[in-house]
Amino acid sequence: MVQWKIMDSSDNYEVDEGSIAIIGMAGRFPGAQNIDEFWQNLKKGKESITFFSEQELLEAGIDPAILKDNNYIKAKGTLDNVSDFDASFFDMSPKEAEITDPQQRLFLECAWEALENAGYDPKNYAGSIGLYGGMGGFDTYLLQNIHTHQELRNTIG
Picture (cartoon, one colour):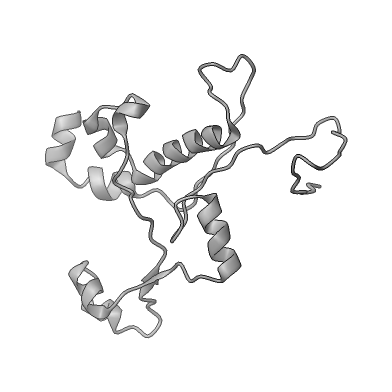
């Protein structure tokens, strides 16, 4: 059984053996670039889903027959600044970054931001640092964006 308690520096508490302290967090969400913005959106009841017009969806390549389906929802959670990945910061070549799934690029950025949020520099910290992360969704990037483009595949082997 997991019990959660949000604590601050004024709390007095005892640490049970096997306890885990969450000291840093990061995330990207529709309408929020970080955990703080996400929390503010929740508190304000802000709608963070993007709703699209038929014209926008047609321009994006959605089949007009699909748009006529009453069950088709013309909305989606979208993330901003997905293309702002700093490949050199993560010791990646521009080509390697180009073919890396954008979800994985965001994951790397969030992992680093979680360390920053916790106040730890892994290059200068003598102890062990554990980082737990996860992503949602089925990864189709390789199949839809790399495998289907022979010219690109020829450049990467």
